[in-house]
Amino acid sequence: MFSSFSRGGASASGDASDLSPDVNEVDLDEVLCAVEFGKPESGRNVGAGVSVVGVCLFDRRAFKIQFCEFSTTNDLAVLEGLLLQVRPSCVVSTEAGGAGGTGEGWRKKLADLAAACECEFVPVKKNSADTASLHQDLATLLVAEDSIKNHVSRELQLKTAAAACAALLSQARLLSDDMYIRQCTLETYPLGNYLRIDNAAAAALYLFPSSLQQSQQQALLPLSAKSSGASRASSLACALSAGGGISSVYALMSRWCSTQLGARRLFTCMSQPLVDKKKIEERYDIVELFQTDEAFRRQVFCSHFKHVFDLDRLAGRFHRLASAAKDLDADAAPRGKKGGIFSRVKLTLEDLVKLYDCAVECTSLETTLRGYAGIHRESLEKAFTEPLSEAVKSFSTFINLVEFTIDMEEAKHGSFVISRRFDSELASLLDKKEELRSRMNRERQKAEDDIPFASRKRDTEIVKLIEDNTMGFVLRVTKKDQSAVL
Image 1: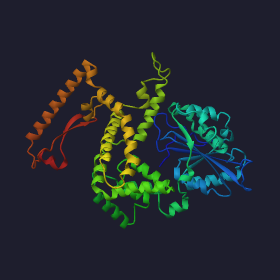
Image 2: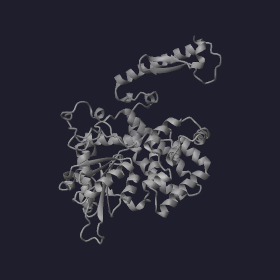
Image 3: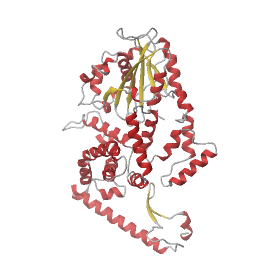
Image 4: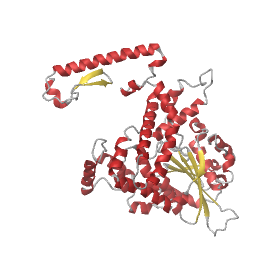
């Protein structure tokens, strides 16, 4: 579900697999984890046999590095709950299981725990957890607005977690990818904010599907964007009555997610159950709001999510673009790198239009949310309206830039080009293209008028003009109308 590393086989010497991501595309479901064990500091009032567990997490979607540290005795219950909350693709740890030489007895337990949580266990060399250059490495990764000095008295005081971070940075090779330079944030993972659920409890409650069940469920009930809620519910009921398919709460609820972002958010909410009463009440206020006001619910979900692209994946391309732009010289192309900057980061005009469509939808959605006057309006404003309003304001310049730069009429036909206002020759070529398109449409209409179709509907095109990858533009009719053509 989460794994997309370019992993090679382990060598005979036992070296770990290469965790470096693909240079062109990064799976944005990727979460990396490193775990180290150490001795409690002399000032801590703990009993005998207690070890300190340090955890470092890196989220490729959010460009976020998180530290966490806690004490444990002879089990890893807290760590198990943490792994089920973040669902990393792999768990990195030094060969001894602990940077301080205290983790010899934990290595097999950690490997078994990673297997139980469906994570790959990756042992690395002990010197990978060396923190001698960690401050400098983190300073290279942090965003320009942040400074490593802001974290010296907080995250970097967690010595065992810092060792885990050093092992993670070394093994994932984050410093060798310009995409992450000056793009990351550092914070403490809020372990106490979420209810801890171990693997046994999650399995007993059927919260999440296993790896095998995921592939089976995708084949069982393919989600159709055109199917109604009633038909989808009927299909689910049939599958459940037949005793197959939907075997977890997440698999059942995620069928109603209309976007990748929604499915990902649902998974996060179920993996990290809140424990703060106020936050829980605020979340259920929103649930009650949409449950009781059906008209408002339909207005929001049926009108404003048609052009929502996977923004997490798109954000990764923009991060790579921002990093690549630093290499540009004012008078020369980047040395040793072929092709333009956009081709190297795989960012196209179509991606800009997708982001533009989403920003326009957000503007319309903000207007709809501000017009709501029912119950729990204050909770809706705090959770969605106000943050969305700030995002809309920040995108106002981008919307104007896209509308001025890109030919939006051509974009409606699936052709993403620069606006004709910038070049007279470009305007002439686009005029010729429109003339050809007009002539093809006249031929399509002529063919439709000449063919004696049995039934004709008003304002419906029976003969369609489509673009084929091999034959170019062709005329096409559906199978039920082919008898009139033959």
